[in-house]
Length: 636
Image (cartoon, rainbow, N blue to C red; front, side, top):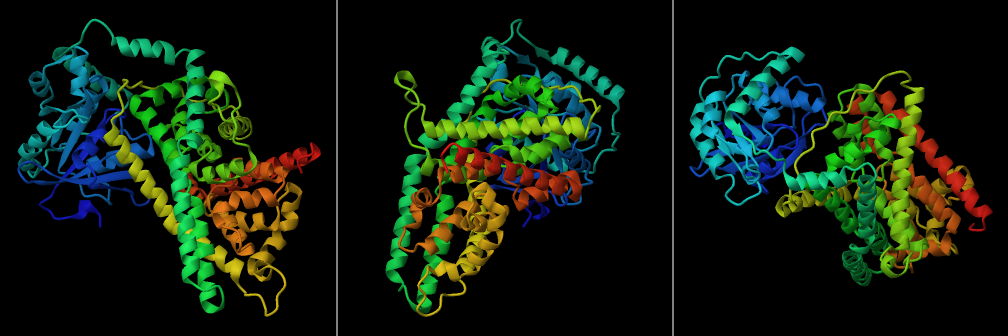
């Protein structure tokens, strides 16, 4: 049930603010675990809703709106924010109260937004977030004068400190009755450039009258930016951070992976001991042991690695480094035909292409947004991690590359870094090609980016976001992956072999026939019929390919433990086939969910099929070149 559709006595409040103002941190502090994430109907814009109770017992339903600098709505995210604020979003009841969240350390744009929101006629409360940081930097903000100048109540907040939202909660109690009064007459109209300048001039006047800034710039920010934004040292540090991240994916996750692996092994042994191997119950045993446990377990074992990747991304974002990375990459990406703002969507695609594609809404130009959407799936998403780690673990020796101080660099992590680098390089190359072939002569818009202040990450917010992503992965494992495993097990087990059969059971199955049907097409790239069976459901979700291989080989070789899939592949595949399989998955066509999001974001099935087709062609070509080259060098 949509929590914004609950009882009328609940106060409906919407958080509005600029990007990087700490709005989401404030939302997390107010709602904690009493929140959920969904999409607005008809669009892929994400919304976060949560509930809270004020000190006076008033129930509040809180909505975290996408960040915006104005209600002009130049991107899909900003359209949703505008429609909710104005009460024209059909899926969400109009808010009773708007909380305009402003970064107290950088009030200039926040005050302009507050002035524009005031024109809508809705009750508004201005919350000065990160007030502790502003005070630490020597900023003196006269909140009473600010409230008088704006004609709005003003409260201070520190979203990341215990008790930092007390003043805001008390204000919600005081403002609750006012929010139920009739709305004032709206004077808002979509502002043009002149209107925006006029609002900014008024905001600057109020800022000068109410805020006294110290004479010096924050020394820590100055010193950090001198290094992190350096054109040479900054890029070197960025590459080092990414390299460390990929090393950690292997090194840090192994103990947790061993625990999960051991748990599924024990579960498989337990099921094998409870159910007989013959008769109707033998079929049930095969389904549970070879289909469910072998399939789903072979994917869930990679959850620690996926969470480590998310952990790095969340920490870098909270620290304020993401925007710096976008600034550093602007020149490189601009040369490849990508807008500087494309860096954050592309970096988000390391976790999953879906939020990465959704994040392109921050790019105003449709051409730049479309180019980013087309190349975002080339970034190495978390769904590829199970494939990469399975093949790397089976065929790449676990040994250090260097000696002495460099002994911590592992060969497996280095190969993983190379695969990620190949994805990045292919995205830049394809963007360059698209720019020359599809959008020749179309100028790119200038890159404008506000660098947020550096802040120490808050573990409560990081862990909450990490838990939400773990839940999303587990839901995926419990729906798409589980359903695909049922299909693969059925195809691998039906029909049953006849009496007196002298060949493996799977050679009498439907999967065997399907695999041999597609094998002639895949043979030039070194793939056997088992790989062909795994690639087909892998279209639903890339990591399903690993689970499919686990199921196929478990059914084919019942005496082998499905958890030892890597060892089974090492004994059956050549090194050339393994390398070709990795090359295929650098460009592997998108999953069904990603294709659906591409269609919705572009509004065109044509772009969706174009994206699928060019990636399929790249995957086949890369696998062919890799296999034939490796075989010529004696690896086949």
